[in-house]
Image 1 (cartoon, rainbow, N blue to C red):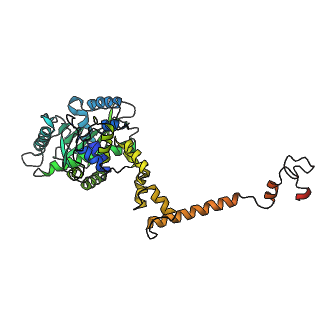
Image 2 (image 1 turned 120 degrees about the horizontal axis):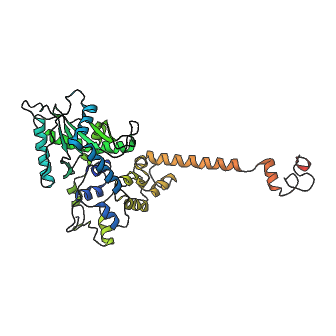
Image 3 (image 1 turned 90 degrees about the vertical axis):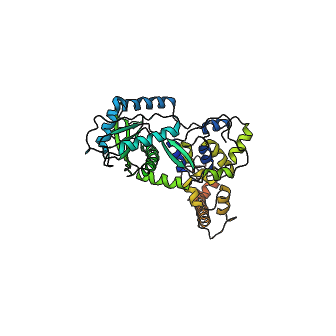
Length: 397
């Protein structure tokens, strides 16, 4: 489906969190499952996306992460100890295992083996020391297709429990950060927690995966690291539920025409037909999460779909899926009067008509005002020259 000689684009936690936030979008599910580069696809469709991080932000983020993990991860482990496990022994002489292996499958197997060794001591209750796994590789099943995920770090505590660490380059000012960015980081970390839980379930005894992750950011306007513990239980539950709702990729692929291909090298008309053969579920939130958002928005607006107005509006309108259906229902031309959405629209239309009629009546001239307005430049009008100008005398008393 990617096309011949087109390399697969790995599905990372950021993309997986966005996919889980819109589980009804079959288009994104099949494209991500097939490893299609959606940014290149959007450019070939004539709707290039502005989604993604700038090169400057990536460089700054990599430099900050290297600083946090420098000196054997001493500062990072200090922050974990301070914010998440202050009663444990200080993380002096922590273990930093080598996770190198060929290919994502090899790295995933190596990570699981390392976690097992770092967790289980002789009594099966922990090794009693700290371990820092730098960029481990985790696998998570997504609609029947494996997704390989790479968190910034995973820390194994002396008691054998595991913590996800997220390192971001946006600042914490006076101990707080941008709520939108913190929320995105929490959703991303929740994906890693889910993947770690699958690894833990295969161990005996199963270690605890902590639901409080550590978010590390620059302090104020400096490059010094600071941290905060973030509870991701809510994000983890939502992500797990949404991923479970995803239609299996095999089912989506079976419904496509034979030979469907999403290679950006195809002619524009063929590529557009291939993309449109998979239904999409567009919402304004896609603009901040998907490379194909501009293309899908244009199609949604052209079709008059109410989803282009937002998911909350779509949910309120029930079976009315297009703007023309909504307007027809409001005018009484279409729709079942027993439908709550239709009844609400017709009531809203009546209230609007009454409000406009009342406003028009209040603006209409009456009595003396009408006489003054229809008298032209006659007596009683400001600026008249018959001797009664600017007064209430004469024939208008």
